[in-house]
Amino acid sequence: MAAAAVPIMIASSLVAAGASIAQGFSQRNAMKSQAKAAELDAKYSRLRATQIGGQREEETNRVIAQINSMRVGRGLNLDSATGRALRSKARERGDAVKRQDVSNEIVGRDSSIFKAKGLRSAASVAPIVGFANAIGDIGQAVGTAFPQKAS
Image 1: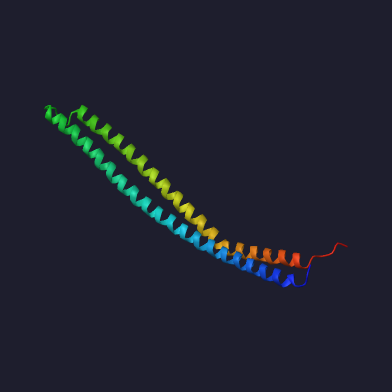
Image 2: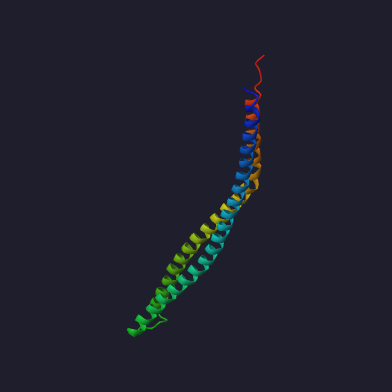
């Protein structure tokens, strides 16, 4: 290898090493931003779960009010066994729907929390990976610039 090419190769490897380090820090910052977004999503999922629970409760109460209204309109006793059974069944169905919908939101929240934790973990390692890649870039340039002769 020509002696003039060696400094150019070393300079090139140093530039590549610097780029690898910068890329590691850039990836760390991107992962931190994604983790923050996942944490916000988890926070809003919890809020949505609360809102959904309230909406389902209102829907159940509306259904029960309609049942009572129809029974009163027909001149039926609200405290009869049939009236209590209808209200009880409406409450059971409404509560089941509420539990399912709220549970779905909670699963989404938990998934976002897990994603945020994973991203934060990966972000702490990204600069180290950048430095490791930089060492590899320099090692490759040195190996090419100063090849060892087979014995």
